Every structure is written in C-alpha cells, then in structure tokens.
Amino acid sequence: MKTSVIVTTYNRPAYLRKVLSGFADQTRLPDEVIVADDGSGPETRALIDELREKMPFPLLHSWHEHKMFGAAAARNDGARIATGDYFIFIDGDCIPSKSFVEDHQYLARTGRCVHNKRIMVQLEAVEQFTGRESFWELLKLWLLGKIKKVAFYKFLHIPWYPFNGKGRAGFTIGVFREDFLKINGWNEDFEGAVHEDHDFDERLERAGVKRWTAAFGGLVFHLNHPAHTFERNDEALRLLEESRRGPFYVEKGFVNRDDAHQGSPT
Image 1 (cartoon, rainbow, N blue to C red):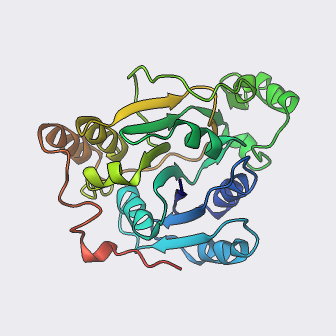
Image 2 (cartoon, rainbow, N blue to C red):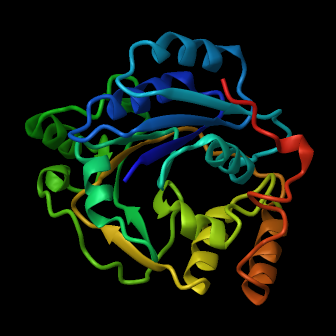
Image 3 (spheres, rainbow, N blue to C red):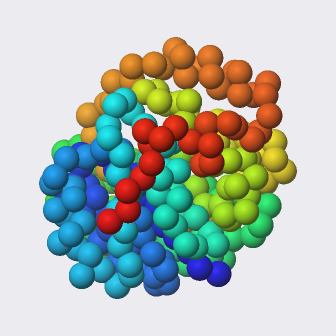
C-alpha cells in the first residue's frame, strides 16, 4: 500500500518545518508528502525548496492563489498530484508522533476512515517544542500547563480503538483513494469558513465509510496559534445543513472543479 501524506498550510513556515521534520522521523516513512498550500507567500516555497533534498521521501508542493480560507480546495489540490492508494490529510500545525504513519497503515482498510487524537501545545511552548520530547520533558510541560491532556498518552501505544461517534475534527484523517473518490473529495463550497471537515466526514459516513480512531496510537501534537477569523462562518453552517440533506457526492469537489483552484505542483 502506497501512502501519501497531504499537509495543509498557509503562511506558517516555522510550524510546517516542525511537521515535515516529524514525518522524516517516522517508524515507517510515508511514500510521499505533499504540501497542500492555500496560497502562502515566498517563505513557504523557500522552505520546501530547502527541505526537498533533505527529506527521506519525495516532497511535493501544490499551490493556489489565496482568496479566503480554502482548506478544502487546498486538500483537493494535494490529492490531485498524490500517487498513493491511501491518503492521510493532516493540518500544518500538527506534528505527528513517531508511529503516526505506521499506525495509520495498521488501521487502513477500504470502507474505513481513520481519525487521530491530539495533545494541544500551548502558544508559549510552541517555539521550542519539537514533538520528540522525552516522557519526562512532556510530563514537565503538562505539569506546567504548557500542554493539555496527559503527557504519557504518547507512550501508551495501543494502535486502535473503535470510534464512539462523538465529536468530529479535521486536523487528521486517513482514507483510501477509492473512498475519497466516492464522495468527490472535499467540498470547495466551504470557502472562507470552517466545517468543511464535518461535511467531509459525514459524507464519507453516508457513503458507507465507517469511522475509526487511533486512541493511543497515531497521536499528533497540535501547535496552538492565534485564532482564525472566518468570513463566512454562518454561511458554512447553512452549507453543512444543506449538505446533510443532499447527496454525498458533491459537484464542486475533486473533479468538476473551478479553474481558479487548479493546483500547480512543484
């Protein structure tokens, strides 16, 4: 099984460096990593050019012009140049734990999407945090209130646990290409707003793709940052309700796409 990791980013090169370094230090390397760029400036491109020769996997870059928050379109752009059988979508502020890819491969099945748990890293700890801290370093950070959730979760390596259906989050999700194509990927109507992850997840579920989580395996360290301002949040809630009443295959998705969002790989 060939695994493509698709990392969404927008103008946070320092965070992206940490995330890509985390993928270079996996127990099982991904077959390729695609940076799905929502229109970042030249610093992000320079970082990718710098790291491309250093990474132990092919590092690709898709980019479209930034208009509003466009994570859905960026993820579709990344998927368009991905060559893997299995896609792992992850946000560019989430450092993978060392067994992240291996745990996804352990859980991967057609007809199943895989979510992950996260440990939140507070803003004041982000600059020095690497995701490769020892147990005692993590415990200290937790006791100081600089990370949330118990620090030793990372070391309780139980790679699977059935998801109980409560809560949805899009910071990571793994899905086979064929299941991704069943729903036409991410819904690009969710531009300038959140809830595109809820829509993606629910449409997969309606298409018969069951949700699982890696409870103590496949953890990520979610680096905190100043809150986004979303221009169309009320509209996104309306779109989500509309999507719930409609077909799971969306028109404005991976195929039949707006030409403005054609990803240009580098």
